[in-house]
Structures are given as C-alpha cells and as structure tokens.
Length: 158
Image (cartoon, rainbow, N blue to C red):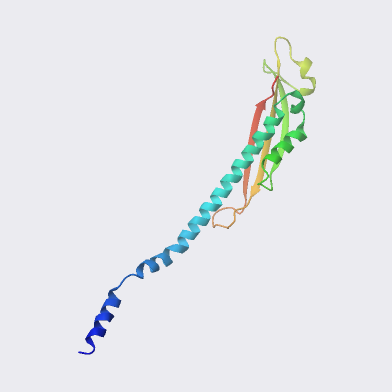
C-alpha cells in the first residue's frame, strides 16, 4: 500500500501534456523564422524598387520645370540620385528630346526655328534610374542580385 500514492503521482505526471506545446513550438519556430526573414527581404527589395522609381520621377520633375533646366542633364542626374540616398548603388541617366506638334523629330539645338508654322516645338525630358540590390540572405533558386530599374518621361513646361 505504500507504493499506491507514488503510482498515482507517476500516472498523473505521465498523462500531463503541458510540454506538448513547447515541442510543437520548437518544431515550427525554424520554419517561421525562415518565413519571417523572407518577408523582410521581400519588403526590403520592394522598398528599394520604390526608391528607384521615385528617383527617376524626381529627376524628371527637376528637368521639366522650364527649358533651361531641361538642358541641365547633370542637374537631373543629381536630383535623381539625391532622391534615393537609401539605395547605395543608384545610377541615373538623363536625356532630352524635341518634336514638332506635326510629328517631325528635331534636335533641341535648333528647336526654335525647325518647326514650320503653325507647328510648335514640344520638349521632353527622360530620366532612367537603375540599382543592383542584393538580398540579405541567399535563397536557392533566386538570383544573388536583383537589378531594379525606373523610368520617367515628362513634357517641359512652355
């Protein structure tokens, strides 16, 4: 009879399943951590993509202010790269083009006299941005570097 109380506690302890939740947590936690890291990397790449696109828009907005800023290629590139300081590998190229309202392509150097009346000169600026962004972790089947690109075109104010 002396062993009866001890057997009762032993049976109670063996039937107790309060440690099962910790076992399940230990099995799921590595998968959850990988999922969380992947989501963070995806968010980081999405943020960089938005920065690259916004940088192109900032550069073209600077160039489209008037005919003088439309010729400032270096200023458009600077405006674009200054808008995306969080993307360290951001590169920008800028260009301008002119066309007559009747569809004739002309160079911007002779735009004042190239269009035959009643056609007018329309001037456009374009900024292309690009950046190479690497994810924090390497995932099998995905590239080690993502090339992000942005482009914006706008007509110059007359």
